Image (tube, rainbow, N blue to C red; front, side, top):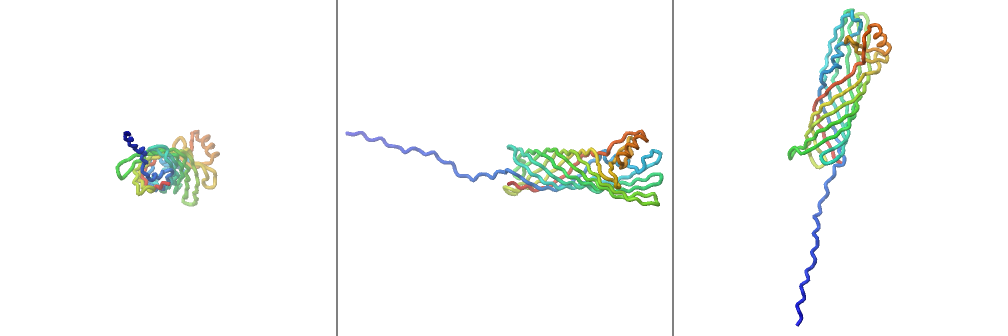
Length: 266
């Protein structure tokens, strides 16, 4: 009498995971922005209030400046993910400043009217941190540093009531720009998102150099506060004659404003 053969159970196979479509990696992100803002009052504006067509302290001089200090800007950004919650990239932009002007009257008498236009280009290296705000929005905070280059164009006239003299200047200045920004991001789909944010920038341009009335010149600020466009040699002569130190007009200014943008992920 033979014993029953033991039942053989087939080996269990390891269950395979469900096939899932891989998420589209946001390797690169490109965006375009439009913004507007205002430049805070600083010593650039204060120094221009001391403009005078005559540097002789015995000649009375009065200057009135008109400046709204507003600006508009357009930007392009390119960035990639550095790690979870962090992105790194670049911002390139163009900023156009509201036109401003000054009018100077001296006791000679002599009247000078100067109308200014200024624009700048900048390139910033940026780092962003991001997180979830709610089901509709994500938040971002960015910090950056880069270079800026400004173009300052002058058109105007000067007159003593008998003769008329055109005033034309084309000056350029370079420096550093620091940026701090924050924004809310609203995804439209997997690739496209809209952004709305605010920014604060600090610009430091050490001097403006170029041509004024056909001569190589810069704006100089004298120790007594009088400002005038001079050539290098004329400035040295003025220092010797007046015994007053002078420096080139600079711009150290804070900017703040709002921006709107659209981003696309590749």
